[in-house]
Structure formats: C-alpha cells, structure tokens
Length: 231
Image (cartoon, rainbow, N blue to C red; front, side, top):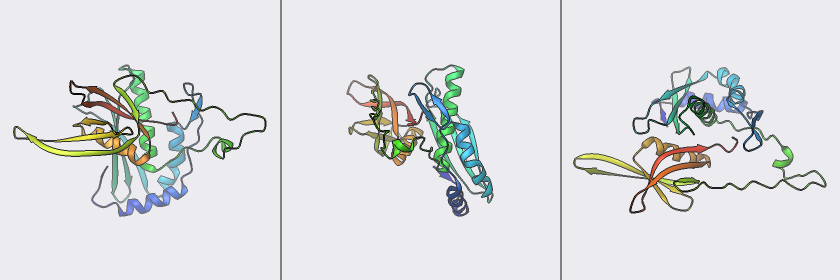
C-alpha cells in the first residue's frame, strides 16, 4: 500500500465514516454458486454518503504491468479533502481475453478493491444461517465442497510472504516466496503479485495461484488473484 507522507486527517475521517457505513446488501444473483452477493453498485451505495460526509472520495484507474501484460490491474486511491491519500493495487487475470471477460474482471477488481480500502463487509442475507438456527423439520443445507482445479492452479490461503534480495551480473533483484497452506512455496519476482498475496493474508481470503513448474520442481507464479467468497 502506498500513501501520502501523512494520513492523520484521513485516518480520523475514515474512522468516522466507518462508524456510519453499513454492510453492502446482497442483491445480485450468482447462478454458478446459486447464491447472492453485493455487486459494485451496492458496495458504492453502502459507502458513498458516509465517505462524502467526512470529506473522503475514491478514485479507481487502470494500470499496465509490463511483466504481466495479460493481467487486469486496478489502482484504488482513497482521498481526503486535506490532500492526504492511501492507495492499493489489485491485479488479476481474466478467464478469457475477450471484452466481456475483461470487463467482468475490471468490475470484480473494482468491487473488491473498494470493499477493502473502505472496510465494507457484505450484509448477512440469512440471519438463521448465521446463528445456525434451522426451521423445524428441515435439515441444514449441505455445504458445497471446494474442488481444487488440476495441475498448475492452486487455491490456498496465504500463510506468509518471504522476500530476499541478490545480485546477478551486477544487476540487483528481489524475489518473493508466497507460502501456501501446505507450506509449498510459489516464487515470483513481481512485487505486485507479492502485494496481492499479502492483502489476502491480512484479510484471510483465499487466492488462486497460476504457476509453472521447472525441471527441479520449483514453482513460479504466472498470475495470482484473490478469490471472492461472495461471488
């Protein structure tokens, strides 16, 4: 995360805004998981007035990563009227390279980034489910098992991210290691990939890692995205 030199006024304003922000309503349908989730418009609806009332605004723009040209990259900046700001970046790979998939990935990235930088959690759309209360005579629904895709894709929690520096032929480099829940390490030279992994580690979300394996069994990250539990 990047920020202005001072964020004291922004932090005070954000604390006041968060006290006023309510959960985003789950009104959009996800036919794949047969569930509902809070779409981008609902996330904005939940935070727009509290942010504005406290001198805060959000700007989201696209960026380009030369090391990962097929990734959708969204920079999200939270601004305060004092000029202070904080900024985060989310990069993810669209399912396909067609306009619809790219547009969906952009919307997904904007929604998740806005939720993260403002601190919005979707509303619980089923109080009974949250309290484990089931209607009499009905069995609780079975939870769908998450099936992990085949080779070269890993869905995992991030235990931590390592970093070490070196120099080869006079050129300095830094390599990161994304440590999965089974203690396997997925290497990358991309700081953006490492930042995404750290974000998921802090939030407790799962990530999808796309990777290659070399002749020595070392795994190198090709792309990484945070898996949205709601969508």
